[in-house]
Length: 418
Image (tube, rainbow, N blue to C red; front, side, top):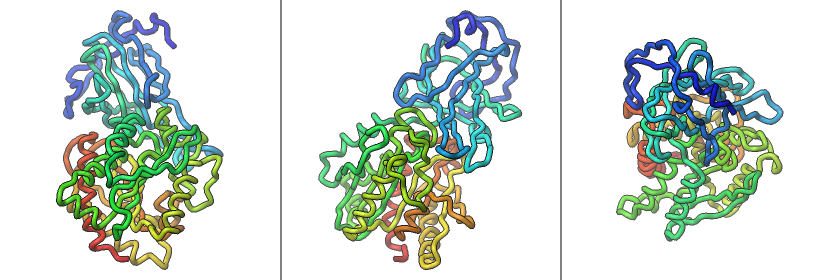
C-alpha cells in the first residue's frame, strides 16, 4: 500500500459539483494544492462484499482506483464492473477519484463499461444510500468528485445486497406457513444454496426466478425481496395471487462471488448464465448442477414452472427474448409479448425488449426454454437510471418493482397461452 508521503498530494478541487445531488453544474478543475496527509487516510476493502482494488495518488492530484478483473475460464473474457469500498478521509476534504481498468472483454469482444458508468451510490453507514453523479472525460475516463460529509464514506456501483441481507430475509420468513426453504446444493466454496417457495404447491401455475448469477448485479436481489414480502403481506389481494400461482426463487446463485466482491464469474471462472445449452460441469459449476437437479426433480413431480425470469443489471434495462424452438415459437413469442405489456401496465418498466438473435448464447433463459419448454426471459434492470420514474435506481425502487410483479404474474397466467 502507499506510504503516507504519497498521500500528501491533493485531489483536484472542482467548482459547482454537488456531493449528492442528481443535478450538477459544469465542473472546472483548478490547480492541485498540497494538503495534509490526513485528508485521505485509507481506502478499505476488507469488509463484506467489498471489491478488490488498489489505488495510488497521481501527480495530477487525482486518486486512481485500479479495479481488479475476474476472468472466465478458458476464455479471453474478463470483467471488473463491481466496486464497493470505504473511504477514510478528513471531514470536509474535497477528493477526486478516477476509475481505472474498465476495459472488459465480453463474449470475446473488447469494450469499456465507462459509457455505462454515469452514477454511483454513497453512504456514511453502509445502509442508507444516496446517488452521486459522475463526470465523464474523453478516452473512457470517469471521475468521481466527493466532499467528505464525515470521516468515512462507502461507495458502491449499485446499492449492495449482501449475504447478510439474504440471511435476514430468510430468517424473517422461515416460520411462515406459506414459505418453504429447501437446500439444493452448495457453491464451489461450500456455501449452501436454497430454493425459496412462496405459496401453495398445489397452485395451478408456477413461476421460477433466479438472481445474482453475476455477483455485482444486486438489483435482482432487491426485486426478489420486494416480491416475496408482497406475496406474504396476508391481505386479500395476496391471497388471490397465491391461489393462482406459486413462486420458486433461487435468490443468490453466485454466493461465493458476492462474498468476495467479484463481478461476473464464479470462483472457478465460470459464467453461471452461460452454457445452459450444454451439459453442466459439476466440478466447475456446482451451483448450476444444483439448480438443474432441482428443476429436473420438479418436472418429475409434475411441477414444471410455466414462466422463468433470470434477473440481471446492465446499462439498458431491457428484456432479452430467447430464440424459441419451432414447436413452441408461436406460444413463446405471444407470451413474452403479453408479459412485456403487463410490465408496462403494472410497473414503471419502459425500456422494451431485445428480440432473439440468430443464435442463442446459452443463458439460463435459453436453457429453460430449449431443454425444458419453460417460457423464460432474461430481465435486465438499468443500474444507472429508471426512465419510468425519472430517478436513480435504489433498493426502495427495486423492491417496489418486485411488489408489482405480483400483479404482473397474476394477470399473466390469465392471458398466457399454454
